[in-house]
Image (tube, rainbow, N blue to C red; front, side, top):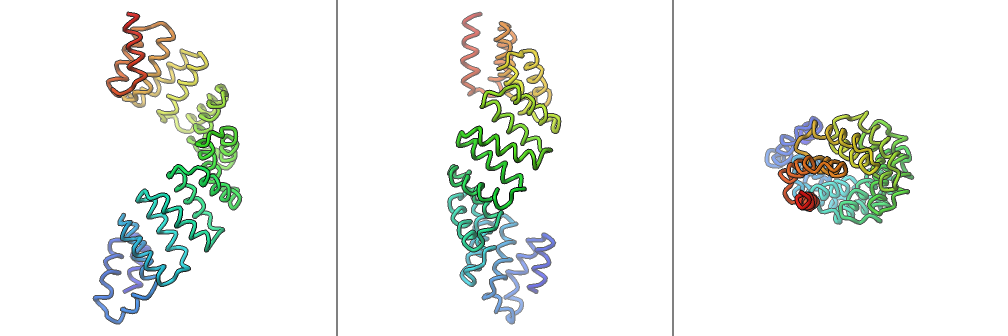
Length: 289
């Protein structure tokens, strides 16, 4: 019966696996010994976790650790369940326990870093991703997450270097290119940022946010017509993008076309009534008119 439950779990039939595990002792008293089997509780925890019952899963995984304190997979899965529950600092503690048992486990370093980022403990996250990038130098996620963390720490030059390393390993991911473009913009390298946005759009021409960001940078460079084209492309893909409407209004204001700017601002405020920038810009134009 226990073997059947494991097979069901392997087939991703977690509800059936859980029912088998929960009923196994009632159906066959001879299986009572499983109460003292760490693997029984571990597989039950996995099924519960896959079904989204994270608190119950944690209870099962803790039972595993009572029976076998050196069972890193149980502690690791507690950490994953805590992430799902949004308890990031507790998750970090779990991954620390895993890493004491297995300091070379890249997945634990990655998830510790992720938990630290979510807990806004960026220095802790950076330490985790530094370790991961040394353990797995060919892992693009290690470099990309490291870049993201450095960006949060406002270390933009270092963040760009990490992103560049990620791009070497994973050059076909559009988000990596757009993230690099965002960093280039922060560093005042708008022309290079445009090239990275273009590369991102080459890989994914339907990304509304990238069209908007490209329009914003083009506007900063004074390339007003190209900026309008970029905003218009964003609005073709998503006519309800308030930020693109606001971006268009900025270009029309630069061109002294207050009537068109006002139309765009009205649309932006219709979609996002709490946009203070749009409110102030509208007030300014109405005074002129």
